[in-house]
Image (cartoon, rainbow, N blue to C red; front, side, top):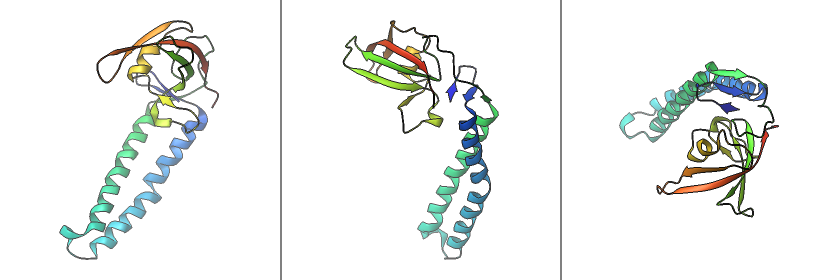
Length: 165
């Protein structure tokens, strides 16, 4: 899954199907489950001191936020193929960088929306400082990005290949 500056999120068919299934679950069975939890907690009495009620309401709020996020994401999604293997860093690419020109200090990550981060590979958003610094650079080029402390770090692009999932 990748995201571009035009607010279009490119998804593989597999990613789209997984996110759609999550949305359908949260919009249907999960809503029924949380409503039952809230109703059961209400029946316990005084709502001001009812921890179960407040916990269920908080869970409901988080669930509804996720429904809105998924709805927006899927409305803006384009299902397609991975980017071309051109050696230019772009969303949907697995990128290997060397920090400060040290070929032994490397990091490999997927440049993509964190919405569909995988446990298999670290994911950096194209909008993150590192992601925006390397986006559009070619293999062999140096890129700079701002660290949280305000300093600038330099990296060299060692490899950029389309993510194969």
